[in-house]
Length: 509
Ligand code: BES
Ligand code: MN
Ligand code: ZN
Image 1 (cartoon, rainbow, N blue to C red):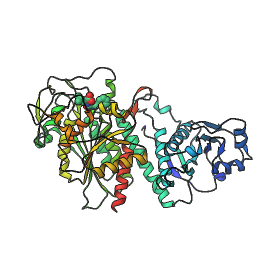
Image 2 (cartoon, rainbow, N blue to C red; image 1 turned 180 degrees about the vertical axis):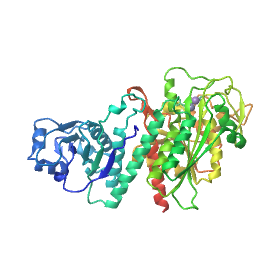
Image 3 (cartoon, rainbow, N blue to C red; image 1 turned 90 degrees about the vertical axis):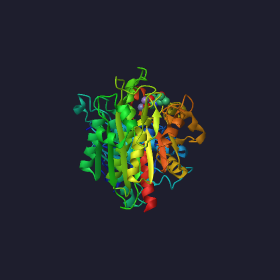
Image 4 (tube, rainbow, N blue to C red; image 1 turned 135 degrees about the horizontal axis):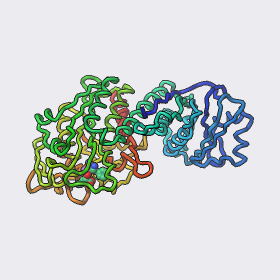
């Protein structure tokens, strides 16, 4: 199991009396100890002040100092973490130091960590109502999972790696409501685990993580959680007329799967939110073959579906009062004698015909049938998540997810959820004027819209299958994984999605 199984809990009591292997304390720029750190400093005869005055740590953001021997308190060691300038201490800085502190705690001799970081208030220019104590507890929990995660399932010496704390406790603002602080941990743990699951599935190579593997994951979720999983095989998809989805999988030896996960946490009468995630377990491009460089990264082409798995698991684990359906069309896109050819025309489940001018624009082909199928659940809202276009990487880079939709309220709600979690999205226009780029001489539409505005024309294509819904589309091609030395799945946008669903459930009840 590479998903961290560290126990994360709140702790109360006099800090100097609490036993642990490592106590995490904050120092701001210009050698300013946080209020909690000052108390500890007093208890240990000014040891922290004297180390700081000797120049061991100045409080610069991200700097750390491990103090191994300490008397006057029960903690074995102290980790001082620099938080930068106090008047510049915002949500991003808070997340960053939380991450830093936990990564520095990954040593074999540290089993039990107590972190006081959730006690830090953000500087005045940040809305204290938004970034309340519960936000800080939740984010500290998610950050802990983030820095504990590593992909070692396929390394042969993974058993040796025991250098992760088994227990992390957070102290917190005791003026904050204890019940909500507890809820913040519960939700933080569920979200942290959901993100880890999304990373784990994303990182799995294409020879292991194929459509059948994803289907098995969905069945496994249904074993431990109140989730109903249904898998549709190719024969059933054939009966439903999913000609677009099946045309993609025809070029692969792996059978396609349509995975459905239902979680019913809300009222019986409440229409569900449906999440549809692109589950392309490997995208070679098909006959319109991709160039060889970095083609390995196309194992990440199922990260949309991974975020659906992570979100459904998180929502079910935190028992969120909402009805949620996750739908994952899953296939490979390979070149083959039986694969789609440029110029082929296929008929989608909606009845609309599609001329496939580029077999590498396959994501929209599997998504359109899944979106049509979603009608079965009478969704109140439908959100698809897909590594859909290289163009979104050009437009927004790796910081913002592309967001387009046919309902402005939904778009604004998603932007908000991204803002508060910093799993951010940015809206692109879905104007009618772009639709003409999809005109085809031989079918109802082409599957590509030319060089210009590739992310928008991809969304235009999907919009033709979502006319009856409040719908939004998240293009995560730039945000779902990192390249280079830190190559790996990010677990985005699980945080954005869970935040959106939690807020929605709250405003409904
Ligand atoms: N999975 C890719 C999108 C992608 C490309 C994600 C590069 C991340 C990095 C998608 O299936 C694809 O190939 N899209 C094409 C569409 C084009 C043929 C209209 C693209 O973006 O090049
Ligand atoms: Mn492709
Ligand atoms: Zn793709």
